Length: 251
Length: 245
Image 1 (cartoon, rainbow over the protein chains, first blue to last red):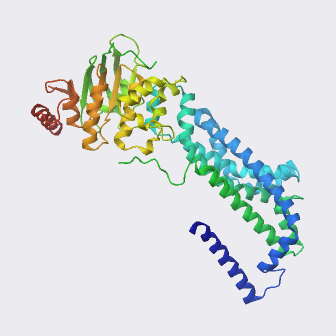
Image 2 (tube, rainbow over the protein chains, first blue to last red; image 1 turned 90 degrees about the horizontal axis):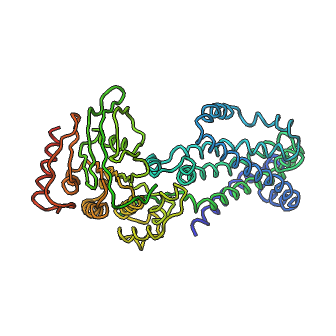
Image 3 (cartoon, one colour; image 1 turned 135 degrees about the vertical axis):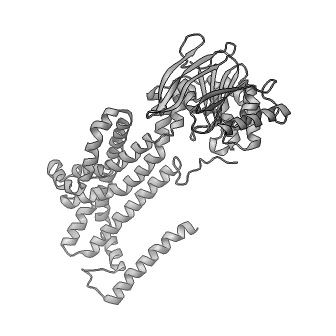
């Protein structure tokens, strides 16, 4: 019960503060619209918002799938090949020193105004967290387990799939949870740079036309979708890697 | 590989020195593991006794080794060794039964279920077969590790402080169980506990920085009674040797 109530209390407080500012300062509606005004605009434009949400969330979903797949493949390559660690890791680290935001205009130039450049942005922004978390997990297999497997005569490939990968799942899952938070940011940055669809595009458009209420409606929708995506990821991964470990021996 | 014969036993000859970054860890150590006997290597932490065990197991060590390790039949040792450590090293995501037969999975072979079930009976964990290790007590987990060691069926069993993390009562029970189930195996037990050595060693070597000092074990078959005068005397004498070193 408390678990359900707590977020509701937080939302109620935020709305009350918002309404309080409106009452105290009476800002023009094109500067800072009231919650009621935003809700009304949201309802009036629900089909429009739904369409753009669909576009953005499709970009996010595809970016997540591609980024997680490529990230896992990279982590496995790095973990199994000393040569890859030597050759690939410095490039990987350097690529992270470049802000992904700076790449957005180039991606739009290369991949166009469509969904491609946004999927690429979402992919790029989650690629490193996924790779790095999974790779760390793969390299941190308890050494005793590796000793045991070696005495048992296991091949490196078997050790990877029977011990190292399962032991790295909790690390991979924390990377995945980060990815769920970052992916929408990547897609929206791509939409800001150049797009004709998506919530990022809608926000820019509304802002440019002083339709601040529509901009708020789009922004809140994006926030709610991101939170839902995070909670779904959390729920889906909680069974395989609970947030509180239960591997302590009893007695 | 694995599931080796239970009748023929193997003896092992170890001879050599190890240095760590130019400092000798041990020098000119000769250690024979006799077929079907428990050899206890007793020593304080950091004296290099685990290094000897790891060398025999062909595991990576933090030192350079110069010497040789050979089996009585001249064949390589790999594939004929079962290894058990202080930590139970159970895979937390696998069931107790899966952990017992993990060696076969690691070798890409189908687990021998009847062999596995027999071993779970022997260590008294049949009712826990489907549980995860986290649902077991420390002593139960170490019994799973013992069953896994037996499942490997190697003639040479290397035990690296397997009882050290257990409480006194569980430790005594585990000593009894291990002595019973590893009968006819060639065993190397590395330990810092004189009780382990006095109860289980057919032969006892105290390892110090000067090398190995062989001690006379108490009389009688293993596991020796924990409260017999001879076991207790031996234990006290071993502790004295350890402290003098």
